[in-house]
Image (tube, rainbow, N blue to C red; front, side, top):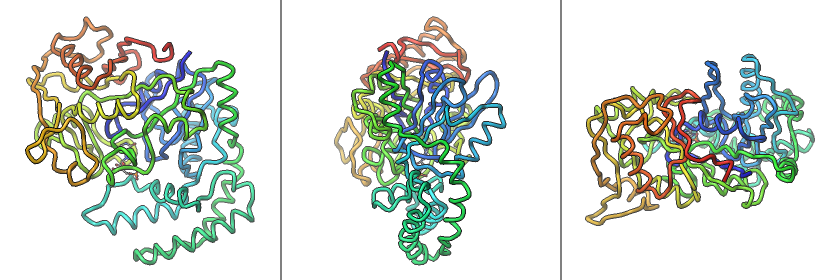
Length: 430
Ligand code: IMP
């Protein structure tokens, strides 16, 4: 039995929720390994919609172990709110079902304040962050200033650490013209939630080692998408963590050999929220069509997503960097009814052809897409459950995507419903 890592191969919002839910029903353990509550995963199970941000998708299923790994930045108040919300929907969340790595760093109110103040200071060059404090929290981790879950066990040490951190951050907030924050308020707020959070704490690397030795199936649940990766994405218009599949190992405390199959989740067209380069963006009626039909609004911030044609260049890049072995193609039905469909197969820059997205922000902003035009289809693909239910043009489109990105379609999702899925290969059986 294989362990599977699920990775977004574009700019996030590829429809990971449904696929992860489908896979989590077959896994024993579900692990989040990067990001924080900037993520938004929507699950629809038996007609009930669950909106998750920080909790792993396994939480909505009985008898699955859900783990928040050390690579995640945890806002304790947001986490407790989310636990409360799913509990109100009848989901049991207990220390037996949910474990948070003791070495995971915390997001504090000062991080969200800094996130907002820094965005305001960037003016026209703003990144368009979710405002959740993700970037500043990761900065503190790397700067060795972060408060980690395990520090909640030691109030005196916590107070001392917080003091050092706030000295640094209040100077910055003042410099940015924002209100300083009283460290005692944060300390008190942390002491209020301390017990509630500590009950879920565990030694995650050890628990995962035991799970592996018992032959349990582990699902590593990625958030966001490869083009938002802090190393490989459209820097600086990225989030502050790594989405690349190798992070599933570092962000949870397992060796790279624990990841046997990398599944890339890929939307049949492209979307992005926030600012930054987007070569195939369609600021026209095509973009409107995709956005309206695909309900392209952010789960976390409600922002309208930018929409465009499928960009095979960036997905091919994600396939190579992540070692994606197969993709789950989502939202094919959104393309139903289009007369023509374009696919970006390469870029042009300063008269030269490129088969990859260069790292420089200037070049990323200036590449122009080279398109191939394919025939669309008039019949509906929504709800199709086998290849023979699909119009020939749709099959051709999918096959061409496989060819261009260099990875097979393992799974095809044809509606938000769980059973509207065409499975070619079970990733857990790899
Ligand atoms: P941050 O993660 O809040 O710092 O935001 C940085 C960039 O990542 C912004 O462009 C956000 O819109 C984008 N982003 C963060 N999380 C998600 C997500 O879950 N889906 C899509 N975009 C995201």
